[in-house]
Image (cartoon, rainbow, N blue to C red; front, side):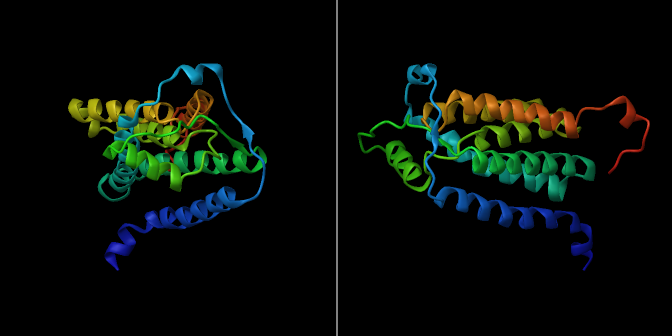
Length: 215
């Protein structure tokens, strides 16, 4: 009971997770014609199968970051800043995908049988080239990177900060070098991060006069 009371704030994670996965699955399966997003500059970005490594590391990166702020970080405020950022961004992604069905046509014909190519083939099989705007890989990575850099404990460990920033950059690069996203998706993800940062991180004069909503 003490554990349940101590971590009661984490209930929002599985509840939202179920909602998000259900909604995303619906979007992936509905029968609509997507608008193809394609910029000329996308054609000049080469395909590189080795970026499958940071692309897949994204899952562990997001899970570990959320786990840390949920269970091991003392500040509930920082927990809610991260969770609300992820929740608002991912919900807006669902809304955008519903209102504006979208996709891309960048995926190359894969040749070869290396482990990296096989992993990309598997990725292409399980993930359709639709509902890509903005890139959730990019959005969530930047959101987690922001949370880590804002954390007082993490700022005491420059190696951790450097590793977090490097992994975030590699994941962002992976989305375009694996032909999973266009540059439009990346830019849109950054814009969405700026919007959420203004909502949950930036201190406004009116807010500073009031007690913090969560300590």
